[in-house]
Image (cartoon, rainbow, N blue to C red; front, top):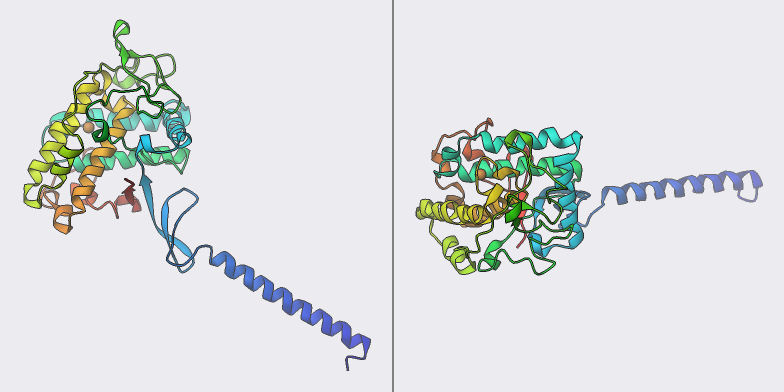
Length: 323
Ligand SMILES: [Cu+2]
């Protein structure tokens, strides 16, 4: 039969078709299987995901220590933050978030354990959501001040938190210019506070005092057992939280302006990490105290208990902190 040239052509066309079909099927399988089963991979927004059935699922935002990450990742964060606070497309939302903090009664928010932890966890996610609209690879970095507790103000190293480069926060304010910050990306000629809370320059008035929360102190605090939640919470809020706000001074000193300071979210992200680390002690640690309180996280519709599990936060947000 194949000696007949007509049949020969039919046969060739047929095998071509079969071959092309096989190739297409293989390509489909490859695109379906775009990750290695069981592995952990980053998605296009640099979230850490699990590969299941060829799909990336269970994706976590990874928050990292600011002085530990690459310079360009630091720049990326600062650019997103400045875009949020200056670009008309995002500025309204930025101002809404800053004033969320200033409009919540300070006594309720900071002077009791009632909502301090979950309220700020919610606030951080809202802030992060805004920055991720600008660049979805951005997460909130934290600043682990416990490693530099005895010289936290130091800015001599270009990797330091207070570095004056475009990857730093700038340094102390100038006492002869109303404590205005005059270096770095948030210097008085480059950046202003939101007008709803008084506007003007970012101010800092460093007290050169050591922070109590050095690595040893922090380790002891994290080791407090579950039935001593209130002691744990009190140390974190009244000592760790308050000291850095007060020692930085200026914009950070006053709860009516502190959410304006770019260093505020770095500080609170670290406090959130400390709470999460303690919560990882077990289910009873995770749910300690807040499961039996009924305070709303004003002005939101959330209750405290909705913000206890960082593996499963409202809005399907999952957060982990990298050490
Ligand atoms: Cu606060």
